[in-house]
Image (cartoon, rainbow, N blue to C red; front, top):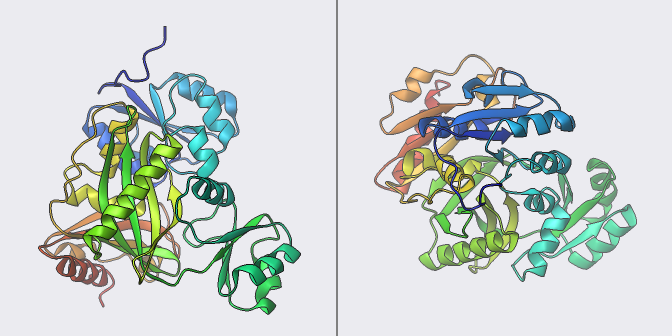
Length: 383
């Protein structure tokens, strides 16, 4: 007789993670702190997650018999990122709970399906159109106007797989840039701020959130996150309500991040959904009673969700590969800054745009935290 889905999976059990990057690493560290064993499955050897796991299986996701064998050795499985093949998740789910499940992955790993899901649920999204040819692109541009953003429907993150179009004569080059494959065209939103809400839904439908986090990007990659976001309380309340609606419509279990555009008039649009812990939520490791990674563990194991109380204003700065361009960063210099925490992901090599780690600063005000984390990052390269 199989256990009830509401029966908690307690410390001493084994957590399986599909995917082996920095998100899995931070989840594994929290799991081990709480007394769980961790197994990880991905195509990579000596991965960031594998370095801190009890067992690392390095096999292609398409090796479904290996996936099933992996599932037989764990008590529950969760996902480290959204671009895992659906067949992999479904094979694992034959033996143990996978949280979030394949339905959530089916929606969120495809931009067009995700936009249609949100629109059908009555949630605010930017105007969009499906694109399958250059002719459709030209027609959609005529309808949506300029500027607009053309995006591939799959495998897009950190600005990958998208192209901004400001005039009709750019359409052909944009179509070629996205590989002349299925795409989505979105009307450009003149936003004032980019926000995210990292939230969690448990197996019994319980809900917790970290409020709004303000995000600043560099070259389409998240550069800086600030909590709490510098927005009116009513904006946060609306963003949290929309996020809860997303999680409930998905019937998701686990941590989900909903990204928003905030217009100057206070209007919120949902940009995209990440069905996992999120880069903007890394600051919760140091700034909140319960981090997003512990919360993910609690949710997928059916434990009560923890307090999301923000202990102090916080700022998180990503450490990208270009910081290694000339030499190893000066870690000691960064650590001389009070109230700054260093997190490195154990990646073997640095390259431009690759997320290698992050810094988090806590302070009495958000502006002080922002200045503190930027000063610490500048100290890494002696500027």
